[in-house]
Picture (cartoon, rainbow, N blue to C red):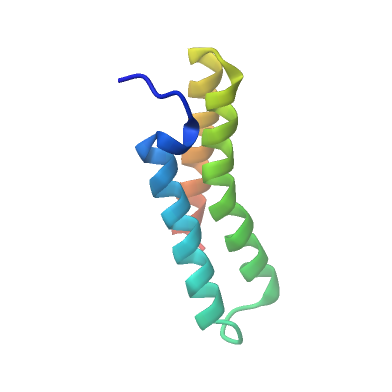
Length: 81
C-alpha cells in the first residue's frame, strides 16, 4: 500500500498515541518525577512521530528507513526512562 500523507501511516498514528500517553503520564506524575526527566520523556515521545514524518517527506526509501531507525531509537529510549 502506498500512502500519500504521513498522517495516514499506521506507525505514525501509533507514535502520536505514544506521545499522548506520555503527556497523560506526565500530567499525572507532575510532582513525582524530576523536571529533567519530564522534559526528556516529553521530547523523546514527540521525536518518534516527528522522525517518521520527516523521513516520509524526504522522498527516498533510504532516507525514510534512516529516519525510521532514529524513531525506533527514540521509542526504545522511552522504555528505559
